[in-house]
Length: 258
Length: 197
Image (cartoon, rainbow over all chains, first blue to last red; front, top):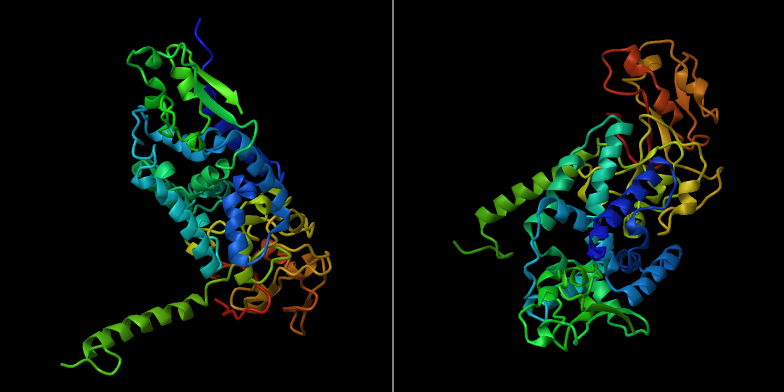
């Protein structure tokens, strides 16, 4: 009997999130886009306006709580960037991010960019990353289409936004791991140890690798480049995509809450 | 040749000044462009840009669909922040957008204190000013902020006008006359210098 492939549900989760936001727009129900609860947006506008947007706090705190327990689930399940990637490039998971895992040279770049983003926002008094954020661009395209049908007025957004998004996500393949400051912020939050956060571990009794066979499938398919078989794996990078669990031939990847 | 006291040679100085005068000429030219109209309760523009997180909640909740994200081509820095466009709709002063804004860029004010902007009559394009007979904006204004002068041409009382935009939405000048460039009455942000197109 084949196992249920949880990772396949991700694209539907992301599409569902977008559908909810489009429905809210059409039904004049103000839930906002993901930007409403964006912790990076919160930090940026706090820096830019030298104050705290108090009304944003409940949503942002809820998101931080979720990240503490479920890590970067947003990256794996809801980020529209994932939809764009899945549409335009059929990534054969080949461990292309191997530089990233194990603290390679590029691993620090997103964290440095995160710092630069916040300092720049403070100096120019303006949320800098929001301008080029792929999530904002994605919804910008949707609103450009809305504008087309409500104002009967096309705008250059319809061409320029997809172009920038294409440049960022499709041409620059490693955006998520090498640039995205939002992802870096999630990683930083995840590093705070809490009891009961989700972890993927190997059952060493059944795992083929630990029984002297060549496998390491879980590492090859991991979009975050986590080395599950090594003791020192960077679990804070995990996007909870379940690819490792789904692709394990011996069903040895288990979920731990600890 | 030895560079002058600012360390720039004459040739480079001339090129620089030509470039800078070109750059300086651009904003003056851009003044004729209509400034972005913010939704009700908006904080001053510089503060607005710092506070708005572009979450589009105001765009979503507006029951008359009058709020839109600013186009990228209008200004790169303001892209995706909200603006009010009266082409197809008007503001019914429900103030929902001010209550839902999470970032503090729109501050809740009472309906009476609402001020999106001022209606400005574009005399070249207004049917009554340029020709004769039209009183649509005066008839439709819910605040009775538009009156007729002795020659039966509309005049805006900016004290009463809250910029709801119903006059701009309903202005029929484009359908009545063929030689106008746009609507005869437009909302401009209060207190801005404008040039009537």
